[in-house]
Image 1 (cartoon, one colour):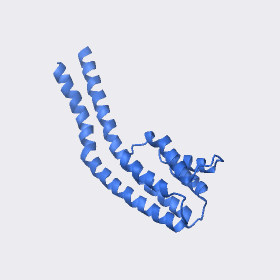
Image 2: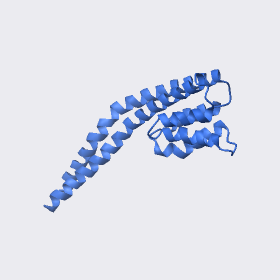
Image 3: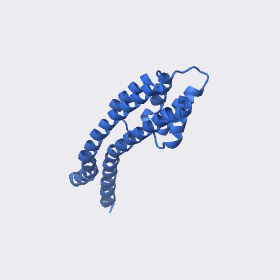
Image 4: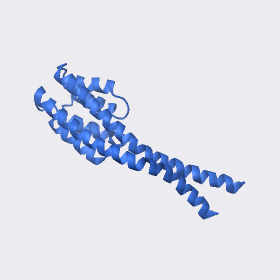
Amino acid sequence: MLKLIGSLLIICSAGLAGLRVGAVYSLRTRQLRALQEALQLLDTEIMYGATPLPAALRKVAAATGGCIGPVFRDAGGLLGTSDGYSAREAWSLAFDRNFRRTALRQEDLAILKSFGEALGSSDRNEQHKHIELTVFHLRQESEKAETACQKNERIWQYGGFLVGISLVLLFL
């Protein structure tokens, strides 16, 4: 009886580990899509609402949930303080604070940091162009992430359980 319980625990824990790793693939694609939507909303606020950047960032944060909303909230909050942060510094600091909570990779961060370099440093039309370019790059990364998700998610999900079964068979 003890062997059976131990075997089930090994299979379940290995399977859950595989499910967790597999979930990271789909989480990254969802977060990349959320970033694209958030940037398009920011573009709308800047271009058509003529909303000042700190307020626009806070509005986007309110409309965006998950791990992406806090980035916009922190950037808007830092710009709204009297500490004298530039938009570039606030954006960079906000991502530094929140990056570990996301499933994004370093290449995603590089795209967003590049966007932050141009944030708030030009007129509305130039901001619109920078946002469109960033959304384009994020869309490319999203397509790559979707391909990786389709290829690897099930492998990790089933592989975890198979590794657990293999370990149990090895120990018996």
